[in-house]
Image 1: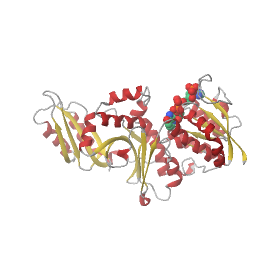
Image 2: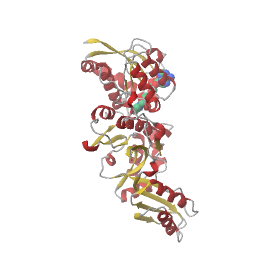
Image 3: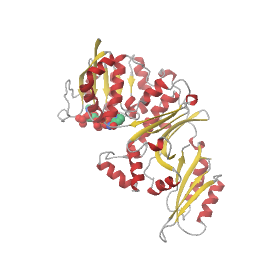
Length: 426
Ligand SMILES: NC(=O)c1ccc[n+]([C@@H]2O[C@H](COP(=O)([O-])OP(=O)(O)OC[C@H]3O[C@@H](n4cnc5c(N)ncnc54)[C@H](OP(=O)(O)O)[C@@H]3O)[C@@H](O)[C@H]2O)c1
């Protein structure tokens, strides 16, 4: 074997603990795979005295010192798109150390600059764990599915949202109710905004889109909508139409440009994405003539995420492929964002209206004026005086037309809540 591969790990939380345990348990086998002895020579976190359940050697209170010492790779598992995580990664790359990270926020925001820095210093920057946790989707897009241009990547990329939507469907309970329970069980953060608002999915989508389309990760070009407005009624109606609601990150080519969106979508109950349940993740890649490929598995948690980090460490030790986004940074194109309002699909529409004569005719009129035609409709009565739900599925229509109609409909004093529109994924 050649020289020992020295590993410095910053961050010993959920993911860092998993990496420490996996290296302790299977270090010898992993060393054989790497062709070099893997050795942890430095670790850092915030609190030196925290009980962690594994042996610690090489502790330092200053994570930055790990980027300046003799490590071959610095593993950044602290998190955050600025601050210490960014400083650590930049310092490590500048000091010609490989970097492995699970930090989607950092890469989605600073991916190009960090890729350039890695290349300039002749080292690698790997991030398999940053998108879809344990699923090896980064490797698949970076090295596997490269022979054909990719048309689309669609993913369930946030386990918290998928858990909430799955629970809402099986129990009929509201979003708020299920979210509270998820927080109590530790499946959702105390501040769930980044998850349920779609921001976390957007980070991951920006990275997958870069790998798929050879573009600079462009978080600002992702249109983001979360799941907080989804009601048990939406889920029940979806089921009546033969669909299930999932939070999807979708990046696809439209008229030669790239459309990136995070939004709740209706997926057919028998489709692969519809059957990704609970906290699992799933990614569908449409690789043109090569066909469609579906990946699913655990997208978060100690062992799955550590599995992806370990794979990156071993690959770095073995001298595996070095380009960060699958191409030299200089050849990544600036992402040319598609006009998302031109995206065409069928739509699920829900209106909460007063049960008075003429409401339905007025909604139908607004839709017709915007060129939106209705394929099917369900109307549900409630107790007298309560709003009723009118639900429609449209024929294929551009998003802009539906938005125009909903703006007009929402302005009526007979319409009680903001109308809801959800695209039906083909
Ligand atoms: N959790 C997952 O399932 C998952 C999945 C995919 C990707 N990721 C990504 O992995 C990264 C880590 O996530 P995590 O869930 O493991 O986080 P975590 O459990 O909150 O752990 C964060 C670790 O960073 C340490 N830390 C925080 N601030 C620090 C500072 N200023 N200096 C030094 N150490 C500091 C903490 O120290 P103490 O332990 O002393 O408090 C802790 O060990 C994030 O980028 C996250 O997005 C996580």
